[in-house]
Image (cartoon, rainbow, N blue to C red; front, side):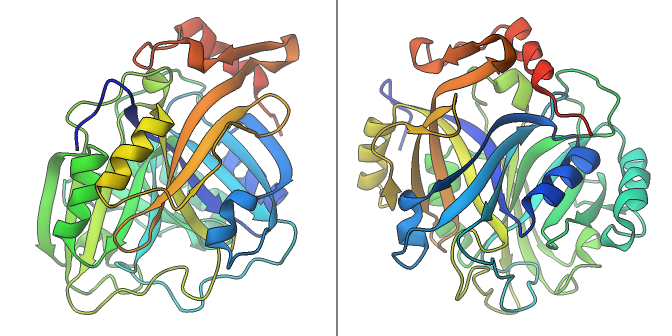
Length: 358
């Protein structure tokens, strides 16, 4: 499947993370990761997600937040119509679905000191090395959602915070080659930075981390050039296959909006032709809003979901309207701009005036 003049897959836009206490989690993400620029924060029924919620319509609060220094966003989700449940077993490395979110930093050691001061033992006691030789560590949020901190030299601005935003995540799979069809061929994360099987230093402290895994790190050979590309920066997807056992689905006996990493969101243009192309490749939309939805008062998006071969939930999101400077009534109709045209830097910098300060 190749890109068509009728649609564009720009790359990762956000990570969807479900939490049990929305206000406490948003505050932690602001302090820990500098995710203090909101795009929306609204409570609404979610009929789109019925197929992920045993056919029932749940009500949830959702807030999209970003770090102005650079990196992709986080959509923080918390149900209001039911009490979310954690994973029904202790998750291990290589379990199926999205198991970890990558967060970027300029200085891993400074970020480690910052994280230890904020969350204590929910942060690794010491640094380790990735298979690519990068300094790294892991940290967990209030619901034990897992984040891996990685160094980056791509930044949009400098607020002085030690953390940036999202730069990808880890997806557990059962068959690497089958997963390549989606992640490499369709989503175009087609450049392999690592393909190695063994045990790994940076996973030694994680449950199941002493076992044997195949790790494949993918990046796009032609990164997206759309409106927010300069702010979001480079991203990666790491596929991991457990070689000593079969991974369990992280949302086994649970639904979307139970706590965990609920989806990986991609920024796209041309939803309807994309849907036809995905259907031909065997990855048709599992659910489709069919038109732009209002996310809060001033954000409109068209949302669809597909499943990867192991049912990891992938969201396709086409932005129609977003607030740039909400206090002054400045909004952007994205659909009137060419898909490949970057937003002016002054417009992106204006987002900082929406910052929430604790």
